[in-house]
Amino acid sequence: MNYYNFDLDKQVIFEYNEIDLPKGHFLHKFLVEFKLEKFEIIKTSSTKLNLKENIEPQKVVIHDLNEDEFYKIYVKESKDNWKQNDRFFSQAYFSNNLIITHLTDHWWILKSTRVPGEDVYNFLLNEARMTFTMDEFLDSMLLTLKWFNDEGKRIWEDTRPEKTYLSIGEVNWISSNNMFYDPITKQFTKVDHEPRINWVDKQQYMNDAIRSFIALFGSLMSLRAHQHIMDYVADGKNILKRIEYCIDFVETEIFD
Image (cartoon, rainbow, N blue to C red; front, side, top):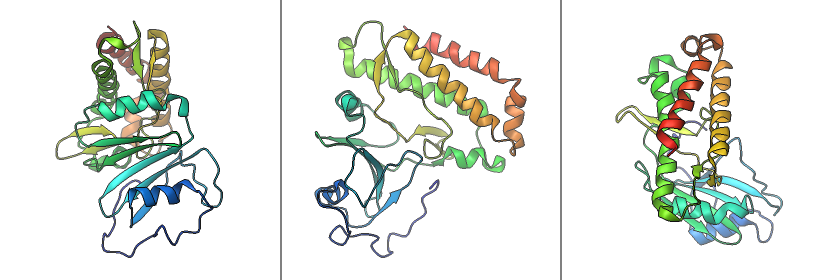
């Protein structure tokens, strides 16, 4: 789902005492513990949800329709890195929304308030709605990378491993429900977060970044039906110089 348009007065979608779930299923435990009465399941490309079997790992986004809040639940997935990620997301200063984490041995949950705006993907596919340029979108991606690294240095202060940088791994920047754009404030916000926060050396950071840059332009090249995007990449002719621009940004703005 790219754009949430719902009626808070509609009937309850699920009540946890009515859902036919296997004994001990994490969703039943979650609904009881967090007291959700009306909700919807947001399906994403990485959703791993099985309502018939209590298997692991599972991952799902739940939208609390009463409070208009979002829960991203990881069950036994990427558990080895949960503590480090929990430290970041529980202490980082997000500018457009509030994120609260819940960590146990069984799950890691990111609870988020609504981010202003709408999925960037919806704007990219409709040139008439775009009030930002493609270069502004590219810069927002780079500034997001810088923000994560700067916040990591603040949170870990002098305790981070020497000569390391906070990587968020490889990111598909134009996948749906990843980045939002608010036409009123003209602000971009990353809304999809994965437990991939990790301190890496300069080479590994650059490897992660370059793979993300290449994936970004590869995804743009696939949107052949949208002339404004094809004009931006000029069928590939402009991609190398823009990847070089991204690499220069990492070198000058992120690396010490």
